[in-house]
Amino acid sequence: MKESVRISFSSAVVLVLFTLVFTGLMAATYQATKPLLDASAQAEKLKLINEILPPASYDNDLLADAVELPLLKELGATGATKLYRARKAGEPVALVLEAAAPDGYAGRIGLVLAMTADGRVTAVRVTGHKETPGLGDYIDPKKDKNKASPWIAQFNGQGYDLALGGRWKVTKDGGEFAYRTGATISARAVANASGKAVIWAAENRAKLFALPAGASLEEVEK
Amino acid sequence: MSFHGEIVKNGLWNQNPVLGQMLGLCSLLAISTSTVNAVSLGIATIMVMGMSNLIISSLRSFIPYEIRIPVFILIIAALVTVVDLSFNAWLHDLYLVLGIFIPLIVVNCIVLARVEAFAAKNPVGVSVLDGLWMGIGFVWVIGLLGAIREFVGQGTILSGIEMVIPGSHGIQVLPDDYPGFLLAMLPPGAFFVLGLMIAGRNWLDARANERAKAQLVRHTQTQS
Image 1 (cartoon, rainbow over the protein chains, first blue to last red):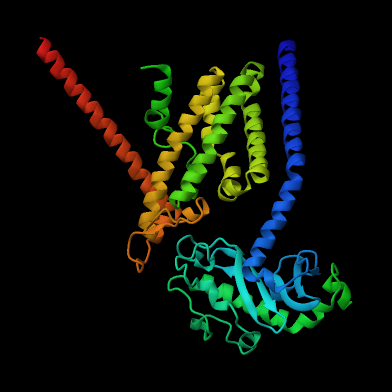
Image 2 (image 1 turned 90 degrees about the horizontal axis):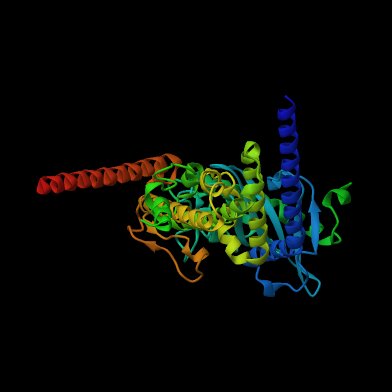
């Protein structure tokens, strides 16, 4: 009996020691890499934004000129999101906002889109999705087999009047946008979610550009 | 055959982690939708297996036998976290390709199996070799599985290669209007293809046995 207690005790001590050493190793690595990770996360965000909004079209620090958005069902959000504002020489150029489609074929589809001050969408991109590989994933231009004119490029340059007129939909639903046979749901989800976001952003753009940087839309409305 | 030759042969064929030991099937089936994805996961696995075998075989005399499994899991999990963070920070371009696969390796039972079956009982040098060759055995199987599924499912070869080598692009083998074969892209398709591959290996082994036996018989006949 005593022997078994001794073995249990020494095993416990060894396990605690191993846990401490390896937790320490992980904590040290985390601390050493954190500044680099934060910097590359920012760079990645900017790279994605540069894909939908030409970097030459604005001259402000886009990521710093942000507005906090409360949970908005127009954007399909599940929590607070951020909206970025592009300006050139102080004049409003474009809004960059995130939206989500809750009704993808396999869960939510995250989107980011940019809209110019006169209500034109420059481009839409998919930031995250779980659509079937090789079937519904053409909504992401990286996976789209048609590299010359990817499916998602149809949204480039479309005005918000299209959405107001109820035509910001796939052709099957009576709208303007093509879809690929066999994977309508993915295309429909992206079209509907971006259409809703476009209407919301177009209707609120004056208010959104007027907010001070770092402000929250919610506080101002109260 | 030398001990090293034995390790190489075990990793690639005899005790191949997938075809022989049938380990790590969860990540294998999930990730092998294309060659590029499959080989990327395989390369990340080789690195983690080499490192976990290295660390555990060098610490093997300090690990009490009774609690070896929790200690192994602790070490593997910590190691994968460190590899994940270091890749993200210092090899960011490679991380963008391999990154999503690295956390998956923690749940890959090949790593724990080789640590338990080999690294915990053998010196450091051969343990690292075992980890590397078992990893390479995993890569060729998952790579082939990915290639078959990609070809049948989408009619392409090496699609997504531009993520690894910028400027290159995959090849569309079947005509552009190939409708795709969805089953091959879904998990059941992975089971079918893997089943065929295991059957193929068993058939080759059975044929080799048959021949060896026939040779032995001939040999004894000529002697008598």
